[in-house]
Length: 127
Length: 140
Image (tube, rainbow over all chains, first blue to last red; front, side, top):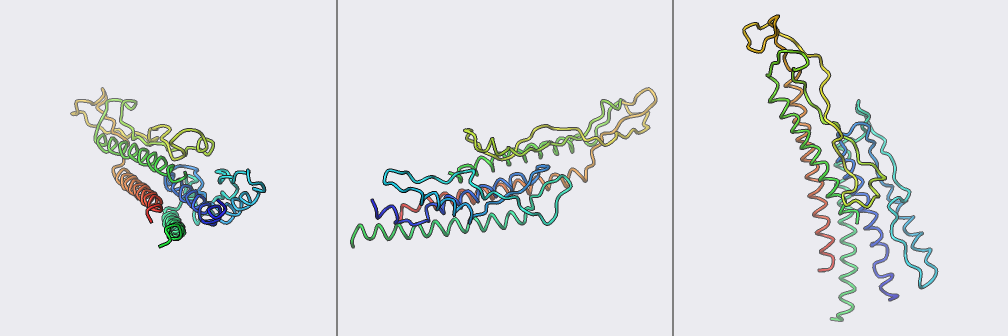
């Protein structure tokens, strides 16, 4: 039990935070043509820190670790280079680049997790 | 899981862009129509988009977030009338009323809708790949 609690370190929480960011950017791209829509992004550092602090608050063996709060602080409005006439602040090029980056980061976290699990599996098999 | 929502978000955007394409197709098809009164003249149609808001985002609904088409409005550009007494739909003074569709604007609108659609398809594809990669974790 105690090994598996820490085996994946922070990668599991990180995956949740990263997938949240991918979703927020998907939302921006979906609303690229919506009047008055303001593009948002997630401050990963803030969300991740919240998650870690929540995780650290479990001071008793029977406490449950808190899942990532969807409304956790860290949602921010993007500062646009240019605002469209209809008040929309989504800049597709920026969003596309950020989406690609977020996807790559997500895959990186998945790779880390995969390595961790591969290691655990190897240790369990003992071969 | 947040990745699930992307399919709903992207899907709603695809839907909205399809509606937009449909209005463009309808406008182009009716660009050459004439009517015998100003009120009957064809007016270009525009889909109005609205973001699905955050409180709806955290609701129980499966399709969280995205974009929706709230209404389809008429283009307010004034209708032009043309003197053409030989036209069967001319009024008693010999005028026909043209539609206010600008074909060039519609073509640009079509390209914009097309690009937005492609963007959202790409978003869904990437989300799908990420999901598949995540599922593959247990295979390692």
